[in-house]
Amino acid sequence: MVDLSTEYLGLQLSSPIVAGSSGLTHSVENVRKMAECGAGAVVLKSIFEEEVALEYADFLKSAKAGGGSGQQYFDYEGRKNPIEYYDYVIREENLAKNIKLIRDCKQAVDIPVIASINCFRQSVEWLSYAGNLEDAGADALELNMFFPPTDFSRSSADIEKAYFEIVESVTAKVKIPIALKISHYFTSLGPMIQNLSQTGIKALVLFNRFFSPDFDIDQLEVKPSFVFSTPADLAISFSFFAIMAEKVDCVLAASTGVHDGDAVIKQLLAGAAAVQVASCLYQKGIDHIQTMRRRLEEWMQRKDYDDLSMFCGKLSQGKSHDASIYERVQFMRYYGGKKNVNLPY
Ligand SMILES: Cc1cc2nc3c(=O)[nH]c(=O)nc-3n(C[C@H](O)[C@H](O)[C@H](O)COP(=O)(O)O)c2cc1C
Image (cartoon, rainbow, N blue to C red; front, side, top):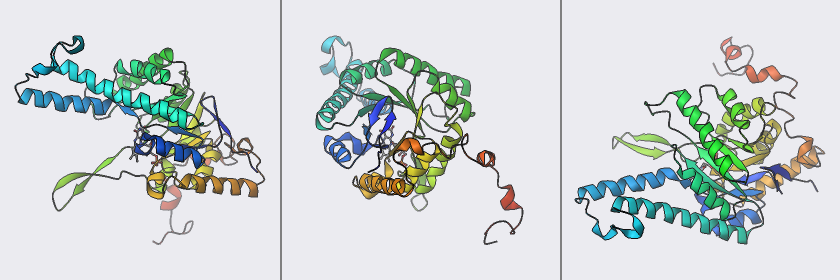
């Protein structure tokens, strides 16, 4: 028997495979099944400030279209107008649902339950949300942070600064360990990851993935697309893990493109302490956690590895025999002629 346990966010996990935040982690039944299938932890679906803001914007639009009276809401619980009241109701309802989910999950499973907040703009909301989720019993908090690079009013320095300011205020507010989940859309990704790892957070989750729009060329419309990742997306986080593993002051968790046990093994070899999965659970079912676990166990047995510490980070840039391979980002060799590689042209 091999030992799959790992330390992540200062918590002892029985397995490095973590169910990442998604619609699947928004129900107690699914979370229970994930635990039964051998997930080391679950990250609950994020509270989306963006969703709250959109719902609020819709309300604002319809209130204005209808003359903006909404008298029935006036003076409700001390709130002076319907907009203020509605804003309050949306936030409270959202929060109440999440608090109940955390409490129910904590009763249902004995693996760590990690709450998640999606931060898409700077606001004081994170602080109160974070405190409420901690009080509800979350074992840790994942901040899913992203400021759209399409905001023309902010410089990259402004956007980067916002990450540090939010992390500073949330780490000062709550005692539970904090993970920060980021995208790879930074000008200087390496230094940004390193600097963020020194802020007092306990883990960085690399990387988040976003939905991309597609075009319907018959209807001439923009449509949503590419909801799920593919195994090829593994490369995005994989090489960064290997490069950053020895350059950060917190642990790293992998996210994006992990669809099978081999991908879990690769991320562990690159230096991940935990590996999050989402798309593959939608596509192959929650049971797929068991399949990935089995593959990891078989591989470890074949390699005579008793526990994860015997191979985690073994192929990171710092430990690899050919560290320079991680710096070769251009295709020089491939452009040089047919001689060196098996290209069909
Ligand atoms: C349908 C769906 C819903 C998601 N919802 C969230 C969410 O609420 N919060 C979050 O941080 N990430 C969310 N994600 C992103 C995943 O946690 C994950 O970072 C991303 O999908 C990449 O991992 P994967 O390749 O295993 O899917 C969602 C992903 C999917 C596919």
